Image (tube, rainbow, N blue to C red):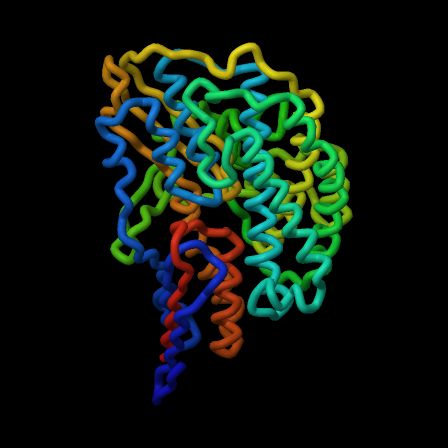
Length: 433
């Protein structure tokens, strides 16, 4: 931090609780925000170009490498798109297995973020190690929950990170009944454990900031949407996934290598836990709804800092849903639905822990990829993150620079942004004139 006449500059070059590299530039003059940019400066990764010319069956495994925390989102969004293009549909026990796999990803990702990455912000601590010094049992509970999510990924997907047992049409091999059913006892423990975490975190002092978000998520007629559904918003939008690109777009801004998603003529929108929760609260189980109310949440959440609590409500739901699927599991007659290559276009969209993950592919008659389009949730939230930062900074300009910096970092972490899956770094510069 440096200070000279007329201008105050703060430079923070270490934020160790986001995934990837980003920076924030903020200029304040005469008590008003003159410039604010949330920059993502990691180089482009060119996955869409890498997919061109590849066979349709390769897309799920390749796109899974985009993220080590939520590879299932990429596997299933790309698989769904390919299956639509090839004219097949996965139903019954294979669909249930996919939903179970996704529950595992939600559990491990939500607990990692809520307990290890975001909770220290509300406790005035630097990291989860310091939480462990204060409350070792709470951290043990969180780690055991995360391990359970990873175990589900291993049993169904063959590996905890970048599962290898999935394929277009289903799985290479269906897991045995005994191995799946063996998850039940730990899931029974997880219902109480996730509720315990939610109760513990409900007592945090959440900053007093709200925003009237445009919430976009999947919605399914029969279940809390994870793997399938129509795209809806709290403003009345209700569209098929096939028409995603008719309503949503992306733009390249000079200050970031990440594209900024927008709705309609350029409006920001919110995807992720709060958007799902607000659009689908009525489809949560009575247990999850009751836990949410006990934690002080209504059916609509507009305080972005309470996304931490919503993640834990969804963790409880995912444990309950996984237990239901595990208890009902019987080995399917076939591990996959076979498909024949053909020309076509397919769209897929599933609910990654951070929000909707959209894929579109065009195939030639041999099943090779002519064109790929992938829009991840963090890209879709970029404009909304900057909008939140403007609102939060305007509300907290009286804070000293160090406290304002921490509040900005906490605001960014509300989104659990997956800037990349590599280093962890934020550089924040504030100029006050």
